[in-house]
Length: 398
Ligand code: B12
Figure 1: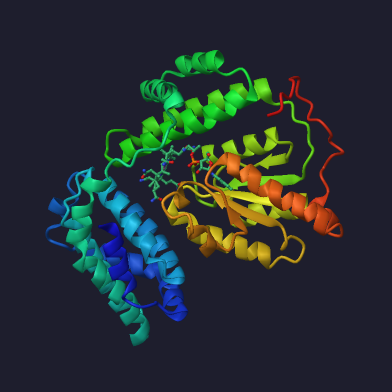
Figure 2 (figure 1 turned 90 degrees about the vertical axis):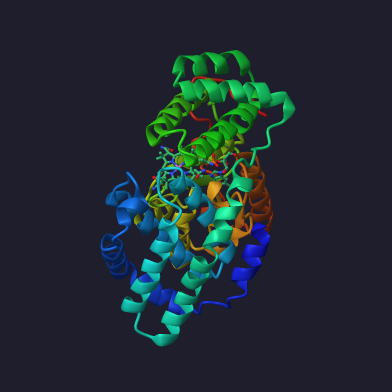
C-alpha cells in the first residue's frame, strides 16, 4: 500500500533547514558529480536502453529541483508519489528497472563528495538510502496505480470520449465542429471545459506516461484545444467587469498553459478583469507585471511538482515587496491533484482544484475584502474605467 510506504519514509525524521539549504546550494555541483558517476557505470548502456544522456541530464535536473523542495518542506509523501510517476514514465521508455537504484546510488555518492558538513550529509543520505532500500516496494506498487480514472459524470461521458478520440487523431476540424454543435450557452461552455477538455488532457497525460503518446502528440492536442478555446472565447467573450483585477499565470519554467487559460476564462466570465500571462513567466517578469497592475489577486498555475520551488520563491518575493505584499495568491494545477494540502508549503493564500472553485474562492476573498477594508484602494478597486471590454459579443452570464 502506498500509505505504508509513506508512513515508513516519514519515520526517518526531519531534514533540517541547514541541510536542505546546503543541498539546494550544491545542486549544480551535485549534478556534475552524478553525471560523471552514471557515465562511468560499466552497465550504463543496459540500464538506459535506447535513451540518451541528454534525457538523463533533464531527468536529474528535475530530480534535484524536486529533492530541494522535499528537503525544504519535509514533504515525503510528495517524494513517494512523484517517484511512482517517474518510474512509470521512464520504465515505459526502455529504462531498466535496475536503473533507478543505480541513479539513486550515484546521488548518494555525489552527496558524499559535495556536502561538507557531516550532519548535513547524513540527513540527506538517509533519504537516498531509504529510496534505494524501498526501490522494490515502489516497483510493486506500479500496476495498481496504472489507471486512476478521472471522474467524469455519466451525462458527459460520451462527449468526453468523443473529444478525446478527436484530439488523439489530431482532428482540429472535428473538434471545432463538435464544440459548435454542443455549446450554445456559457453553462455548456463551462461544462465542456471541465468535463470534456480537462479529462481528455488528463488521459493524454496518462498515455504519455505509459509511452503510448509522444511529446509531439501532446503539443498537437494542446494546440487544438487552444484553437478550440480561442473560438469559444470569440463567441462568449463580451465581459462585463464587475469585480477586481486578477493576474493569471503559469509558474516559472512551467510550459503548461491550458490550466491557467481555463482559470482566466472562468474568471473573465464571472466579471473579473483578467490579465492572462500564459506559461513560463520568470519571477522577475511576473513581479514587474504585479507591481504595475496592482491586482487584487494572483492565480498561479503549477502543472508539475518540479516547479514548486519556483512558486515558493516567487511568493516569497511578493511577500517581501512592500507595494504588493498583501495581494491574494491562489494556486492550483495538476501538481496539487494528488496532494491537495501541498499548496500550504508554497505560502499561497488558498488553493482550488478546478476553474469553477477558483472563481468561488476569489469571489469569497473579494466580498470579504470589499466590506472589511476600504482603505486598501489599490487592491480593491476594479479597473471599471474600462467598463465592458470592447468585443462584439453578448455576455450571456452564468
Ligand atoms: C499537454 C502536456 C504537456 C505539454 C504542454 C504544452 C502547453 N503548451 O501547454 C508539454 C509537451 C510541453 C509538456 C511537457 C512536460 N510535461 Co506535461 N503534461 C501535459 C498534460 C498531458 C496536459 C496538461 C493540460 O493541458 N491539461 C488540461 C488543463 C485544463 O488541466 P489542468 O492544468 O490540470 O487545469 C485544471 C485544474 O488543475 C485547475 N487549475 C489549473 N491551473 C490552476 C491555477 C489556479 C490558480 C487554480 C485555482 C486552479 C488551476 O483548473 C483546470 C480546470 O479545472 C498533463 C497531464 C495532466 N494530468 O494534466 C501532463 C503533465 C502535467 N506533464 C508532466 C510532465 C512530467 C511533463 C514533463 C516534465 C515531461 C518531459 N519529460 O519533458 C515536461 C515539463 C515541461 C515544463 N518545463 O513544464 C506530468 C507532471 C507529473 C508530475 N508529477 O509533476 C503530467 C501530469 C503528465 C503525467 N501524467 O505524468 N506537457
